[in-house]
Length: 136
Image (cartoon, rainbow, N blue to C red; front, side, top):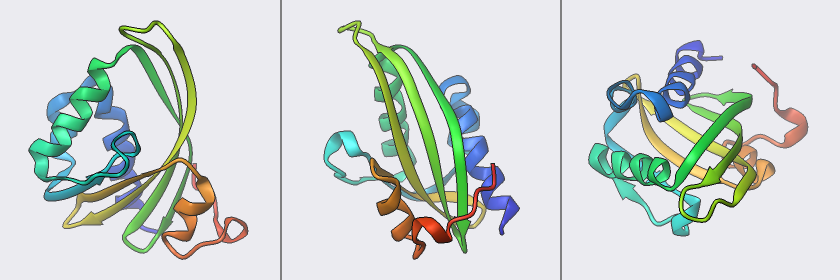
């Protein structure tokens, strides 16, 4: 297990809503991010990642993201997150789970792929669900 990678992903998650500068500091200059809400259309670079973060936060009146599980495999980490919130313009409540695949390079987040299916996320790092171990 790479505790440094797990710690980095936890820092990314913790700073996402509350600390723009700390969030930016977790990002590799060549980050690639594939958000599910954009049909996994990739965004590149720190500024692209900051746009995704900011648009997420702009869409919510309130949002909470609870880390349910972290699985690491080599330089990859899969974080299962439970999201709850209320849409800013719609007032609609949301209760969803995302399974984010992170790849770390040079001590920074270099890749994020947002899966809506946990098994797909685990398979993307070569693990089957029964092989995965929980670290959180």
